[in-house]
Image (cartoon, rainbow, N blue to C red; front, side, top):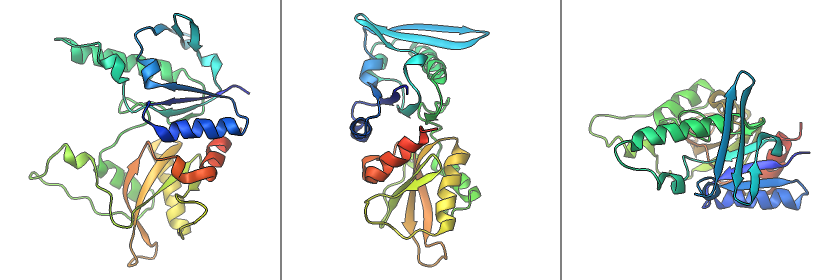
Length: 251
């Protein structure tokens, strides 16, 4: 079995935790951080043609990655590596960022499936939607939602984030399963909420999605959707999280 590739930011401790737990179970894992992908010594060999996309990433001491080197991907990169961005500037900085982002979209799209989560033009770990868009998608997936309100008096940048709410939990949909935080303790979720969370991840086109819920005793479902997270805390799910991720790549 080919190694599982984990792409993550160097400060993403839960991704490093996942790599350690999978290795402890005997699964081969290749972990590449954004710092490695942004290193000045990294060399990119990238091909586009009628046969598709191919690439090889090398350092001065040899090859570090090609599509044949892994059997699936956990994508946890938020954006382009900071070390890479630090080397561009000037009048063409925006153009250079766009070109580099296109390169990342292309080589990551050449990685073998399954990919949790596949890159998109709106984010390297999936589409980073505005909270209003997440709310509409969650409602369409069958989840009760907290109504989204926004007016011209608000601050657009601040409206992209929602502060943690009293009693909030974050459950994680992983490859058709739902993992709760704080195991072995469990939270009583109705079947409708569980199905809605899984349906939301499917509608969002990702295999790994944190779904933020707040309690509401006034409705039969007992919980309302308040937000989503494409980079949820994996360690909070404990061993059941490792089970679910391992199972997502078992087939």
